[in-house]
Length: 431
Ligand SMILES: *Cc1c(COP(=O)(O)O)cnc(C)c1O
Image (cartoon, rainbow, N blue to C red):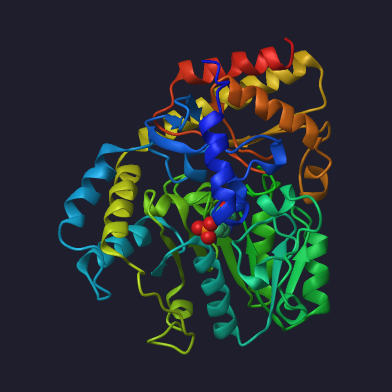
């Protein structure tokens, strides 16, 4: 599987750039950070993805997480096919939304009520508005390198493609006034959190965090960190929000909050919850969620929210995950094999690299020390990552086109796939 031909992708990219900024509808797809052409995708099936030049790759992105069951899952597909014949959208209440809400409340420890939206961005933005409405306070704390979507107030020291862009991680077009209510602390550093609580005493509405960070590459919370955040939020009656857009339904059926046994007041979801359709959700404690309109005074709405086709896809995927714990055993054991294998390779090659992973997600950082926060993540050698990426994609491994992202394993991956990827990596590292 040597994928050298990219003529068609190159031609499509040239044309796309004429009509779409940078040729892409989301910067994370641009391949700018790895100095090659984005592959234009024709189709995906099971653990594979195929581009316009006919190249086949083992897919370690899975649409950035949603495809946990593999691409083109027959159950999800069937649910969509059965639903579309009855109309694509009604803009009115449906029974399917209750099914989804009940399922989500059964699976997610902190959920007593949930509101469906159309993306992770909407979910985090709405959760924060709700927390502010509930507490009557202004400030929020986020962590450097965590990404919570692209709403104005959250594009402050954010992760994901913002880091890969190079320069300042803050976006143009965000006013100072918008950014000033967003305080930033350092991941895994309680002192930095305590200082902010001290300085802004009585005005911190919420702390929002990725319980396992996956947008500065994968960075795990150190022992006790999430529990300490729970305690400080209790002490100050601040709403603790876990952004589980990546970790939700992936680290466990009940997400990171189930795995770590720390229950936030609210949580946000996206990606997996839609089964590949554009879906997000925010929810949590009943007394907080009852602040949302039309019950309460926090306004939030959506013409296509709870869309029947999207709900059908999400319900099919979540039901499958709830009923099949073997999915987690499988993807976690493949994760052990892949990330464990990469660790062995970099040890044998004696290179300055480090692997962070949990379950099926992980990142190979091109830096020697431990990566525990944004500062340490940023010591990575991005040129070297780009070389690694280009080698791996040429040999049929479709990775994230930037250092500060996760790899995703699906239930359709096999040990043979992982072995193939590891042997390609071994050749790249010369061992
Ligand atoms: C992807 C992501 C978001 C944003 O979701 P979109 O659906 O892209 O708007 C928010 N938070 C986290 C942790 C994410 O990974």
